[in-house]
Length: 415
Image 1: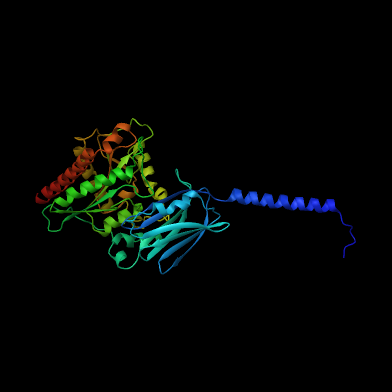
Image 2 (image 1 turned 180 degrees about the vertical axis):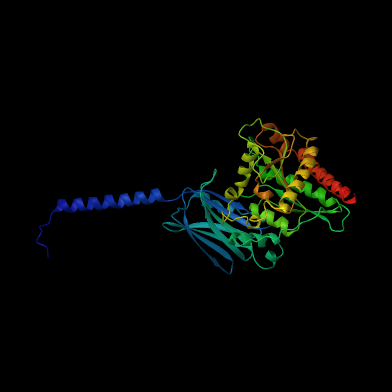
């Protein structure tokens, strides 16, 4: 037993110090706690993505439950707020994978998110660091399993891409098919951006991703109406597809052409006109082309990929070989023909095809062009871009350029 006499003042001081310490720890804990700022759900026929945007990075754990099928995501260091409570109202009845969603405060420092599923899924859950206008993001991707996955070649490519194991076919020397060929001409249409990546946004709030997919669907209809052509799309609806997967899909389906469709933006809102770009192996042909390529190549980081540093393995030894050179030359020919047709519809931003290091144009054996239909950052052109009449005419101009390209190829074959 201690011989120290009882000192009530000392006891009060110790209690005050302990209370101060607890308050201090509590304040630090509150300051470190992340806040949920947005929830976005992107359903599509390929996969569904749920994005939770937070003020600071969060730790998470996931597991699945059966009868009924559910995916559970525990979010640590987060408090339930009205945004997360409302997640159930963001689930669309047509979502192929999610039946319902709910969230609750599972413990004092953990929010539990439960996604009730319509079908068994393969989840991919990962975090993204802040970029552009986005804060920290937790991404939940829901991929189908079984027969549904086997029927869609895109799903296999996405799975390999997420694992960092995506491979590409051998580079082939291909001849330009003639319109009279027994094999249909295969054209891959690539509406830029999608899902979490809106692309450029116009002054009136219209997103590039929505405009270009409408033009792509119209162009696909024109191509399909031609008995000698077959069109595919890198994305059929509002879904994010990594740039490398877009190229890989074109090569897997043995595409003869790759047409990427965009609506560009520039800091100066007076910039206007239609542009066409091809790949360059020697640097950009202008400062504007370099700026545009850099902004388009950032799509993977903005849209959100699990493995952001996946290398273009199939380009490692082919970019400067004869196949690539011939492909770029054909791309320039196609680009000039499309530009000529577009010039009858809209002012041309430049009177020639420009070149830069666009990642989406890097298929070494498929002639590929990127069409910037107009500047969505220009108020007047933004209004044209959302016009169904302009969209139809732009699709027609691109199609007419494609037709002339193959007609010239057939004429050369007969010489």
